[in-house]
Image (cartoon, rainbow over all chains, first blue to last red; front, side, top):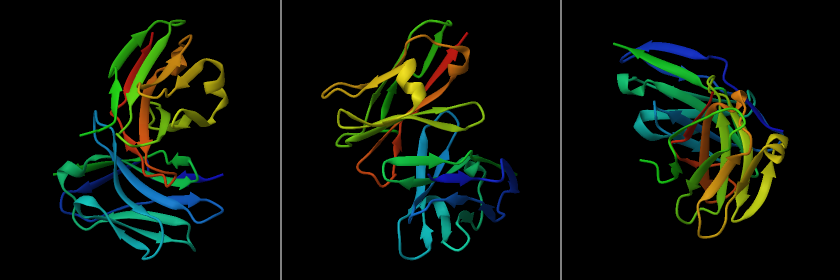
Length: 111
Length: 113
């Protein structure tokens, strides 16, 4: 069975600073990996996905993530955050028709 | 803007009452998921469908929860007898395939008094 760990429940960064949100996964086969974002009072939106190939994948709004098989990780990065990036970010792993989400990291961007 | 439509956005029920939520998946998406998201943002998978057939469901869904995705009608999730612990955001998501790329609705927030 797959599982996802997001070790940081809350991250605070200054506007314009770089960001890394951590995600570790557990899955016996090659996983499909995702990052989703949830803005207040809105549904989740997918930021990016990894299926295979280049371990660095680009997403929307300047986000990227890097897959590491050796480390079982899929960390999310952004070079320069904006106040509008404040939201809850979820890492997810998919195997077959089962999609498992991490517990989320709440990102607060301070002015 | 979500193309998965969930109604109602909010519902308030007393303990023991029925609570019913509906979901219209994105057009052409044969796979539908229901998740329960608690106040700590934790997701609990409830059930998923491919077309009208149940793919997987958890024990909780088999007892007080029922769900269906009839053809040409919205999918629905119903709690037969609400309990305080059912208070949560219920999220519906649809997908084209089994790759895990989900398209979410905005959710139905259930409060059980």
